[in-house]
Image (cartoon, rainbow, N blue to C red):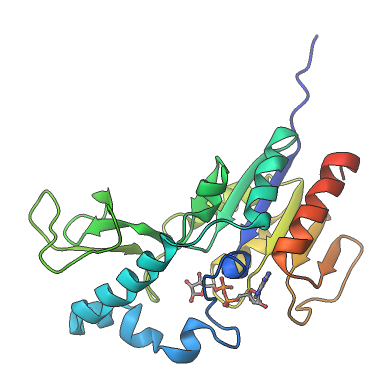
Length: 236
Ligand code: APR
């Protein structure tokens, strides 16, 4: 009986580091956002209650910058993997650079900067035209719109979906994340046993290398295209 060979599944977990070379600040690097801003005043439900204008301004500034930057070689390289593998991206990033580079299966664990959602019904989600979301911008039910971002202390609704994706991976790439924010960082522990895992980050190794864990201490825009070529040429 003819058996369709299943395409091998590659899952890519990305963090702010993959967008750094596009000009978007990370959070915990030297010049990271949380080095110059207090996340408790900007990225929590309490911050929204206390000062919604400040929160809206913080995300408006980031959205305005996002409209001025482009995906980098790492984002584009990942789209090439879709030719040969069943590729799923699970990202902690709220930018849309994976989509703009052409990736077709992207799951945003922490929300999306270019979307807003109702404060009365979180299932009402809207694209934001342009960069600005203002007080007085309302959903169809008449309630204020908020950034469609998972703030600290809020549940990561798509985590179980991400676990399901990662648990089916035949290979896992982890690119540009400090792996300090859970539950996202815990996804590493939901893979099948002994699948190849590559960690790409120019910072100090977070794990010691093992038989199936390879640490590539390099920036994403140079390391990801090289690894993609290797995976396309030689498989894994
Ligand atoms: N290429 C690859 N990695 C890089 C690069 C680069 N050019 N530049 C920096 N990095 C690495 C850093 O060494 C660091 O390990 O990217 C990582 C960025 O870590 P964080 O700033 O903590 O970003 P991230 O891991 O995505 O944060 C997770 O925290 O604040 C919350 O919701 C926010 O999604 C975010 C989450």
